[in-house]
Picture 1 (cartoon, one colour):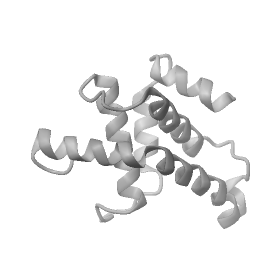
Picture 2: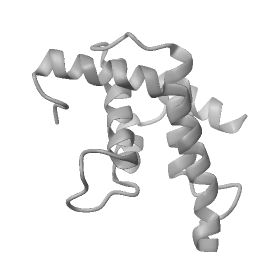
Picture 3: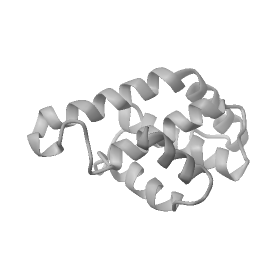
Picture 4: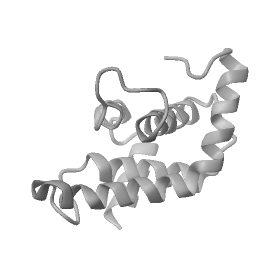
Length: 126
């Protein structure tokens, strides 16, 4: 699977994780977006990955980290199963990938948010 091998390259430092972070955190966001919902979950998931890569937070399965990176690679990739030029239909595959991602990491994301609150005294450090 091409996405999984790309995810390994990001995790091993062969790809620029900062570029992926920028693309993943800005994709689908709008000014004034509330701190809940899918956008907030995506940002919290990316904070989890950054904390994992820095070594700050390790209470997450490697399988989940790979799932997140693979989903983000797919989400920001111009190559989709259903091209985005087909408007709403083209976004369907992205939404399915994001939904599957949250199914895989929902519990670990809750644990990470709790860790953030305990470590930093608020929901998320910027």
